Length: 440
Ligand code: F6P
Image (cartoon, rainbow, N blue to C red):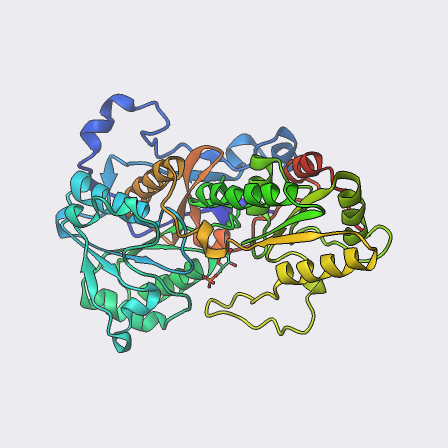
């Protein structure tokens, strides 16, 4: 259970400098966006959750609100900022970089912002990466493109070497844009910064198309990625309906969490089956997936199956899982396995079948952000700048129940966000597809 101590935000010191944004805030004393420092955002969102804690109102766990402060910690004229993007691509990375640079330079008056190239390796001299000077002119139109102008990579690097680079460049604020592995890396950087007694703020903007960062409404880029995925589901449906015994099979990204598979399915409402990592399924037997699919194809003449890449790994034999540079398990290919099993099963029962296999893979995440995600990225970038200029460190900025908040990094990596097999999202998927509650 999350307690108040888990939500405590670390600061580098008292805020004594007037924020250049202060004149804009004056008239908005009572709105959500003009942060009243003493106010907090409740963590629990039901009466029963709050009631079960058995403590007075003021002791309920609460989050620090994001947003601009009237007083800040860093003197903008003397502040140097670094930005790094790490891990897999995600729509909106360039939007976040652009948002950070424009807010820092145009509103706070920060004059030196550099981008480290290709993830954490950009800090390490042996890789020979130069830094990129980031000005409003450089970033102005980068949001038109997918990817990240800084480049990215997976994997940890030595925190001592990273902090050496920060010291060499006199960096006071580091923004890290990445997923759970990146945030863990950032926590190591914070520990090294502290060991050296430095005053460097490290603020994260959480990124993953899988939407598996906990305690936040949604990660940026997720909506764009799931929208792209709907194109493959639609194509699979068209193919399936156009051939006798047509079966459109779509494999989508989603390592531990099936959010992309669920939401893209709901958006198209064309799929008959959705298989996700959170809900194990049986392939064989009278009540297994394959028999159910056979009946569906015989009754309706076609079917569409959406599978998240992390689903049904227990069925993928013979492939050693292994790990990528971020330490993530490399999964066996459930899509190819299902394609083979479906053909074998229907052939064995004399059912005509034409399986059309779609694996859009990276195509769903290498596109530019859609307008919703672009706006979200910009707002996250603003929140990150406000947090860092006010000396917050070892936090991510996030939107939780529509409010921008500061979440300690340790809490953000303490677990993963999953589709709840007993929750309303999965219920909607079951209603949309008509698939059984369980196979087997
Ligand atoms: O982390 C998001 C993600 O896109 C996953 O959905 C996918 O499994 C993985 O990254 C792919 O990683 P890589 O870029 O290393 O191939």
